[in-house]
Image 1 (cartoon, rainbow, N blue to C red):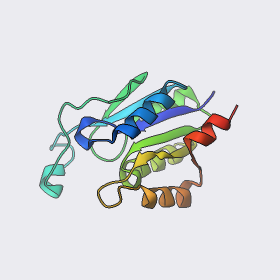
Image 2 (image 1 turned 45 degrees about the horizontal axis):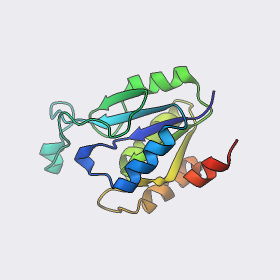
Image 3 (image 1 turned 30 degrees about the vertical axis):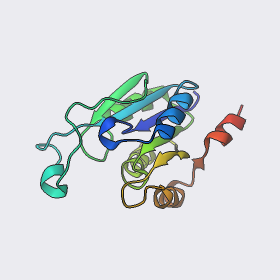
Image 4 (image 1 turned 45 degrees about the vertical axis):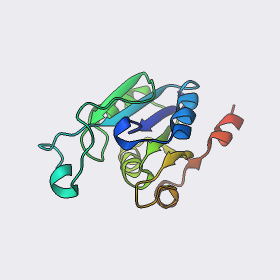
Amino acid sequence: MQDILLIVDVQPSFAPPDWLVAGIRALAKRMPSVATVERHDESRTPFERQLGWHPARDDESLVATEAVFIKHGYLPPREMLDYLATRAPQRVLVCGMQTETCLLAAGFMLFDAGLSPTLVADLTVGSSLDRTGELGVSLWRHHFRQVTTVAQLGEQP
């Protein structure tokens, strides 16, 4: 099986920059893709109580994909992992919002499931701690080694 693209939390609550949405939409047209959307449910994840903010209860993905998985918190839902495992991709390309938190959490989950997570470094934005995403890219490279760019993907057969 070919690569599959995982788009993490590119949704209105996180105000992704236009260049990020446009770049991910273009890449998603080239390959199978799935997305996660984080929604608020305080009974499942205490965002308001612990952090003083929360994502919307009804956000939608800003990128059209073949499947969208709703999550509550940092980790993708188990259903998404099961879906990806049945597709048996060569690798899972990961992009989206919050490189050093939500993307890294997805990477650990994919890695632990035996899938091959690869970060698309130029299609990520970090959290408010580091909007460049450089911290997250460094952590990804340290833990999973596999980092690519859109240009490098274009060069592959």
